[in-house]
Amino acid sequence: MSLDPWTAAAILGMAAVTYACRAGGYWLFRQITPGPMLRAVLSYIPGTLFVSFVVPALLAGRAHTAVGTVATLAVMVWTRSLAWAILAGTAAAWLAWSLA
Amino acid sequence: MTEPVVFTAAGIRRGMVASIPLLFGLAPFGLVCGITQQGVGFSLAETVLMAALVYAGAAQLVVLGTWTHPAPILAATLTTLVVNLRMALMGPVLAPWLDRMRGWRPWVSLFTLVDPSWALSVRDMNAGGRDGGYLLGVGGMMWVNWIVTSVAGHLLGAAIRPPPGHPIFFAALAVFVALLVNLWRGKLDLLPWAVAGAVAAATARLLPGTSWYMLAGALAGSLAGALRDARRSGS
Picture (tube, rainbow over the protein chains, first blue to last red):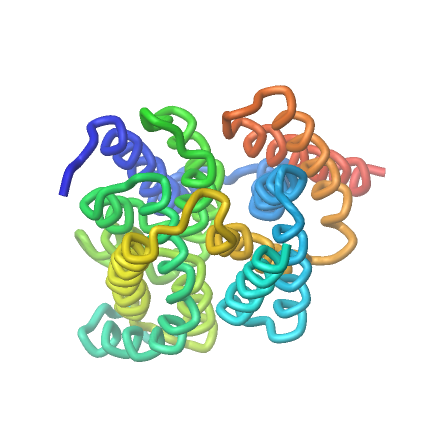
């Protein structure tokens, strides 16, 4: 049960900014009204951020990563269930990896 | 709908019951996070600390995907900020409840705010729900569930000890691939997503071994989308 000081500091930093987002948004929007430009930028952030995570990982990944991604997309579009998509995608990646 | 907003134990209980189906759906997410934390060398204490204090699966997985030793304090904090900025937009929507909750109640309830608890609460509020305890009930259950499933994932990872590059770690990527399906709103997302992907890929090549490509891609893509929208509405 060890606690590395660098890791603990990173966790505390992450925790602080996360609470700032959770509570700060509500607090701030009570004081000011953000303009349409800021609202538009914020509305695009979730999608563009996850694309930015997935694309380089796919480019750097091996064949089983691509197989798993296609399977995840297909099952998610079909079932709309996060749990099934993760399970099916990981199973497909595992299968492709053990066959390679 | 002119009844006053209250905050009762009954409301908290109703939220707890409403959260039960979500707990099953999101359990794999917590397991994946725990396995990944074990995989990058977290101790069980570090896994519990991160689950309890950060309690934001998407941010945790993104940061863990590029974890280094010693821990990347600045990059982890900034990346978490960008991933969780969306939460700053969620709180204000619940203002009709939060504005009328007293003392610690809005601030503790907001600590437990996550995308699914927000979605359920907005639905309840719009259907005429007047009990702010609902938000804390859903969020509190999900918080406990998040810690329990993270610990289970950590123990599972320690038991099977998958080597780096093992396909089980693909599960972390699968979470985001699946979330992208939910986030896709139609053609308006095409340009920002394409810009984000291209900028992220280029930045990852220019600055290998860091996580700055996520910030660069997300900011470039979101700005591209917002500028396009501004030009359209202006003309």
